Length: 397
Image (cartoon, rainbow, N blue to C red; front, side, top):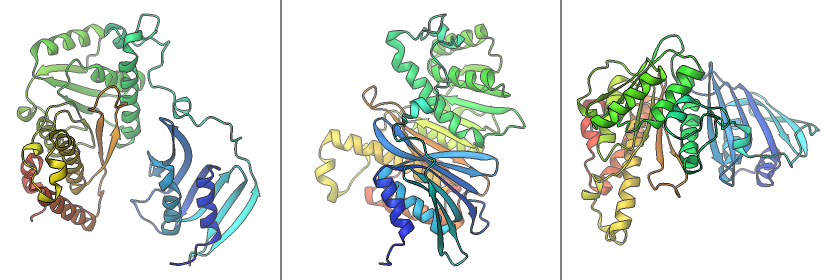
């Protein structure tokens, strides 16, 4: 193994000792549309754990990724070695500027620290205000009984209020992938009582004044009637609800964002197929019950796990979401599996967030992801609905 350079050891120590306050990477080594022209890294605290948030600047878009502190140093070193010629790293001990030659040799310039004191809070929730603030009455929340008219959140609705804000934070992170020069079309499959559908409309149409058209679809006629009545009362004229089945919905030819929250079993897959067919730029999916693979999985080597119904059920759910994520990657989406809300509130707390950009994912990368998928699928001896439904869009075996 090559001996590490001093700057690499310093980065590892700053992260290990929690001294890193901010790092900015810039000046690409070579032009590459898939590599951010600038990356800013800062520490944040999520649910009591230290993470480093990587803020990526690609063209006029900005995205974020929260990396566990145990992986942050390796990520930073690799990105500097591969992509950037300059870095400004601020620690509690010093400000360090790294300048890399064309051959990769590093020049290190050190100055006294300008970073904020270590006592500064890293609480992510304090740094990033909630999209919907308590004390500011949102009409849809008042009508849904979550807030009073003076903006106070009802005691029994605190969990729902946090869930709404968590969802809107996730939406905010992917807004750069949605068009700004035309109307945005959004379809919410299995919308139910539509707390989050109304929240989405409130964020985009009311607060951000974007041109949008939102359709909420559900099988329950009484629920749809209630939601449409409320939309009319609120004056949300670009939000409509209708009774319908996901797989049979064909009213749109192009959709920018597809939302599917707690659609049961393969109904989630049907929504993902629609999203792919429409070429949706953003997919937000929180799966519900996942029974399909539970009935199919067979692997003698995994008998100690699969012989227990509870363990098999949980493994099947994880395998199902892994398959969904991988197939979306094969089709050119970049996916993340995120914790939607604290698991103490509901076990169905996994959210699949997928974004698609023009030319995303090389053919070599997609081929590799397809082979990874095939190996995983065959190991479990399963035939997923999603693969069959996507059909000719996937590579030939």
